[in-house]
Amino acid sequence: MRPKRILDGDGHVIERDSELFEHLEAPYAKNDTLLGYPFFPALDGYNRGAMMARLGIHKSYEITPQHWVDSLDKAGIESTVLYPTAGLAFSMIQDPEWARALARAYNNWFSERYFKLSKRLRGMALVPLQNVPEAVKELRRAVTELGMVGAVLPANSADIGVRKALGHPDFWPIYEEAERLNVPIATHGAPSMNLGINSFNHFAMTIALEHPLAQMIQITSLVMEGVFDRFPKLRVGFLEAGTGWVPYMMDRLDRSYEVLQRDGRREFSEHLKRKPSEHFASGRMYFSCEGGEPSLKNLVDRIGYKTLLFASDYPHEANLEHAMHEIDELLARDDLPDAAKQGIFCDNVEAFYAR
Image 1 (cartoon, rainbow, N blue to C red):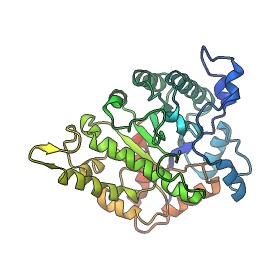
Image 2 (image 1 turned 120 degrees about the horizontal axis):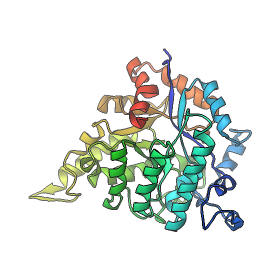
Image 3 (image 1 turned 180 degrees about the horizontal axis):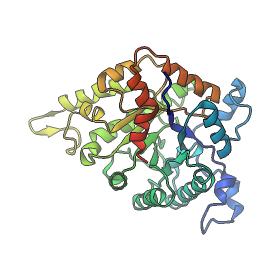
């Protein structure tokens, strides 16, 4: 049975520097010196376009706002929440002033180009983690003035730019503001540098690990630093790593929590008050799932289905036909009840983004 409404919890824009250039403010506005260099750092040493060309995944990468609307219609999807592409390397930026200017330009560009064309195209804002007070201000502006539905925090900074994991107390004002605005944050991987896999030169090997390794690092930091204890209404999404790693991390973090405290001492943050697996099951940690992954049922058995999200990932490494196949594959599963499918495709996406 196909749900009456299918909502995409994670699609992508293809942001072009020449388009973002038009939205830069002083002192960068109209100074085309900037166009001599990429606005965002490279994700790593891979040209994803070369891989797509070899495999024939896309004939064109002109993913315009109207193309997205047409794709939603073709796939029978009501709406999507869109994330950056080049901007997934945003936290690798070393220059805080440039990070602030580029975040504002990206958010303005998205609002003007996508959201104003169709309310079916919602966006997650970039916020400059390199300057936390400015990140708080930009999150507030993006949500209240531009209609963004939350903020994306890149999962891997590759030990440059932002050199702290996301659970660090320096970032807590951002979470306080997200909680106050009732919007989620989502951590999203893509860069593979400095995750211990730099020696790979086959992209299939890299992509198998770049997302889950980065998410494991960030979820460990957020949980063990006590972020979910300190901000009891904060919703955090962990995207594009599937779900198989999640039960493993529940068990690993629970073991650290139980073994590494005794005689009034603990080897983790004093702010962590609850067993880590209780946070995983709290309904505030969301995970994107893939249609055919066998491990999905294991996670549902552990924490239920109400925090699982359908994510097309279109157009990354997948054309529209593949995204539609993912929908059919998930609908065809006989190990999930219809209520779980309804949640994954619709109810949970609404609950996570809440706008």
